[in-house]
Structures are given as structure tokens and as C-alpha cells.
Length: 230
Image (cartoon, rainbow, N blue to C red):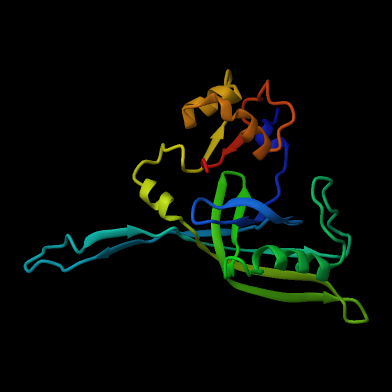
């Protein structure tokens, strides 16, 4: 019998965030992909600096900082109708309209913040915050009038880490960092909130963040995301 992780297909979702210098809040325009990436690349980098002492035998420079990372993936947008739009996904039928929606989420300049939006990317155990660095579109199928029926979008994001989050990197159990948890038998949402945040009263917010309507009886195997405290 399939568990709840394999029984329910989840679509990669991208949401524009507001950011006042603290942890970004995913409260802007969003898009759920029609076709999930077949491959996804996440690269992290550690910087070392300072002078290497004379006679050093291999210890190298001193640790400087841990970069937030880079995320790269591609997805296909389809307007032929061959790939049905899932019931839980709100997506226009035309490829150009789908790409316009994607553009409004990942490639829109925020005039109030004077910079592009930070984007939250949520899929399975992945919870990533970053800004778009490259955005390429390849059209592969057209109607006789030239309107595109299929397009491949390739995106690269540079990870975003607030000053507050950077200061908390050394403590991965901190309630101010994001967590992904697989529910085990006997777990309850208040119990998990107490374990992660030290306060069970956040269960309503976590239920809303994960789109849970009935959260009193959690099914073992369910994947839950616990956002950082704002």
C-alpha cells in the first residue's frame, strides 16, 4: 500500500516574497508548475579567506562564510492539452499566459524594495529562498499562426539569506530556520510545533502554511514544512 508521500503528487510551487530585511514572507503571486523538473541542481559554496601562514602544510585559509547556494532547474509549459492541468493547480491554458504568470513571480522588479523579489521555491523536502539570476525560454511547438504550444523554461536562482538567518546557521535546530518534517506515528501538530519552536501555539499557522484543513489526526508519512519564525 502506498504511503501518503507517494500517493499524493505535489507540484513545485514558486511564490514571490515580501522582505523587510528579515526572513522573507511568501505572500505574493505564485505559480505551481504543470510539469515538475526531471532534474534539479543545488550547489552550495563555502568561502575561506585570510592569509595562509608561511610553512602551511595544507590547512589553507581561515573559514569566512557559508554561501546560501544556487538552485537550477528546467520545466516544460504545455498548451496542447496532452498534459492535463491538475485540479489543485490554477494555470492558464495558453503557453504565453503561463509564461506571463511565471514572469510575474520570478522576474518582476519590486519598486518599493528597489530590487527583484525574493522567491520561495517549495517542492517535497525542498524549501529554498532566492532571487532569479538567469531565465531562458526555448519554444518547441507552434500553431500554424505562430502561437507557441510548448516551451521549455530554464531558471537559475541565487540563494537568499538574511543577516538574521546567517547568524543562526551554526544552530540548525533554531526555530528561526526552516524545517521539513515527516510525520511519524503518534505525532500531533502542537507536539511538533513545541519540538521545533518551543511553543505549541504555532500549530494554526503551520496548518495554514501547509494547507491543512483537518490537522487533528496527522497521517504518518505526511511531509510538513515548518517556516521560520518572523
